[in-house]
Picture 1 (cartoon, helix red, strand yellow):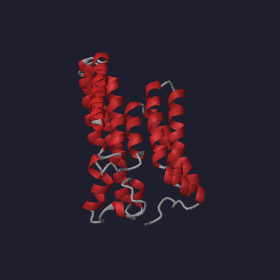
Picture 2 (cartoon, one colour):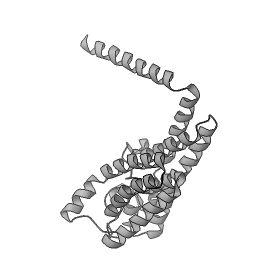
Picture 3 (cartoon, rainbow, N blue to C red):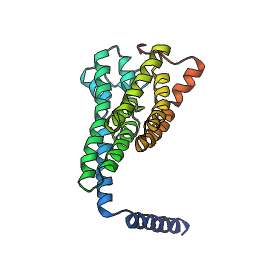
Length: 229
């Protein structure tokens, strides 16, 4: 009886929440937001690092190095070109999500909203892809692509900080952490308020995804850029 009570109560609560959302947001906005989010997530969830390494006969990238599907781990296979292609495609899927989300949103009068929602959904799709049991990459390249599609100066700042930190430390993770902290601040200073808020949300998730790297950095055990698996 108690279990049934909680199920009925939970269902009622969900119904109330959905009714409230439906009343607060017009139907066309829900369609635009839902379409942008779904498309963005699907694009973001394409695991290019895994697909490319398998097609190249390198096996499952998740069994190599850090087990991550991103470009840094692909680089640990010794294939620089493959790592560069992974980086490019992971970034482009973020940019593509923003551009397509903009078009979807524009059809209903919510162009900017559609772009932002699709971009964030692509980032979520990359780090939590349904096809891989929600265990994806850390989101650095997709972060760059999303910000590049929304406010290109932010992407340049991210890349500039990353390159400077990488030159100084030779740690990809430390470079990503520095860039993810600097980018929201820089976007806010440049007047890109919505983009700064989005970047802040993505930075928080990126920092969380790098928690193991942070621990290894503190212990002096983090592998440097280019170190083979």
